[in-house]
Image (cartoon, rainbow, N blue to C red; front, side, top):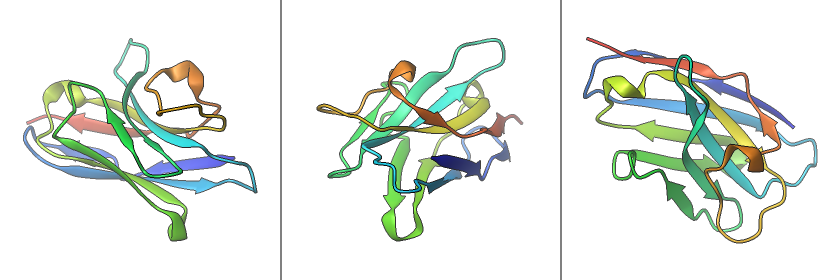
Length: 125
């Protein structure tokens, strides 16, 4: 599985940005897609995930209502729309896939099998 993120950049506090994740599965099963953020010097934190079977999302409490995860199966692409961005939203954003899911998707990093290289998002005035 290969994942390539894009769409990062510099945005002012309160602004919006949409990240894309192009996914090449090569026939591998993908049960869930997740988005993670890694701030400088910190471990990655899960911010949103979506179950492939029905699109059911799960969001971190800090992002609920501001972020939206979605996917376009025809384009093999997942998205993370981010609104009302905060300075603490700065970091490298990664998409990842979970190949074997039981129940709802999880924001736990260790559950994900394949990761992209990440895209930098900087929230600053």
